[in-house]
Amino acid sequence: MADRVSISLRARKSKGPVRKEEILEALGLEERVAAVSEDPPLSSARLEIGYGEAAGALRTAAHWLMDQRAEAFEQMRATGLQLDLEIVLHFDEGRGSIVLPPALVVACARRELPVSVLVPAA
Image (cartoon, rainbow, N blue to C red; front, side, top):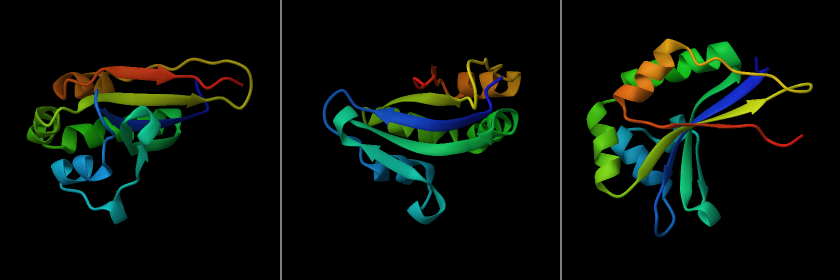
């Protein structure tokens, strides 16, 4: 199992960068209470929804996704955003694995979010 994970709602556009306000406004969040980063070279923005010990962070992400209005995701897609859930694995040593809890799989399915799992090179 991964030692730590960072989990983000990632938004991308086929043309042009994504402004963090496009995510925050749709979800009714303010920047001071949400960690959003913009990545202009990749035309994406990320809203961090979980970080830390893998099992706890995955549970947190599942609960957060289910607490959001389905209409917010529909609104973001209507403006041309492509959404997914990005999970980045961090290992203290060597390799490991991750088991996605059923609650997270269900939450992603209900919000129509593909899941991307990344393992940074050591």
